[in-house]
Image (tube, rainbow, N blue to C red; front, side, top):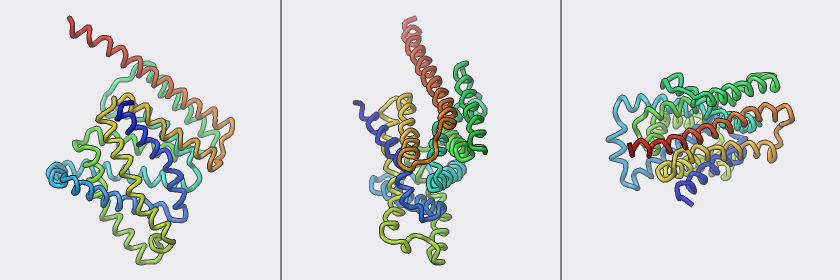
Length: 299
């Protein structure tokens, strides 16, 4: 098997079991968890760049006003996404958070239409419309707009849009994002720590290890993902992303016994059908381009 595919699977399996990790910290507030995730991620990434002799290169390409401005936007979107996700998991909305990441690829396509003037083919529009119908149906089922799912999909979709236009590699980009957020995160953690309301150093060694480990579990799958994108086709990487959302969904339903009845199944099935149509259409379009290219080259 291609090493890139192995790295991709590893990354998405890591992200797939995230709910179990964050559930171990449900006695700690979501804002504090994100503060630790940002702080320890930056420390780990900065250490990694220093040990691999990449720190000078990072400073050269990252520390200029336009790049910092772009990544400041990305940093805010990423922190919002992390905060909503951790809060959703620890508030027993794992199934709804998984819906957000099922919707995300289709919403990303729609953002490409709005902001990048990309054009959708007919069956892509069908997929987007079917997913929208599923969300509307689930709104009636839940008795409210599934705002957690939509917020996760929108924040991560916009984050992906910004990253598409950003100049840095994945590792350098995340290092800069966490560096931008680090002063705020560190100040908050210092304030709650000195005030005695923080979980770190107050709730036992196990909690302390898990909070420090938040940086590790954030960085390791990113390193796998960065390697995967270099060694495997992006079409395969895009398909592998459903490993994480599927695992999160199964964890929510079968491990944490979150409500999921026939009515929910109908709404989710509409979204899943939209993704199947989208995947088949994208694969067919890719095959057509592959077949046409050699003919053009021989003419």
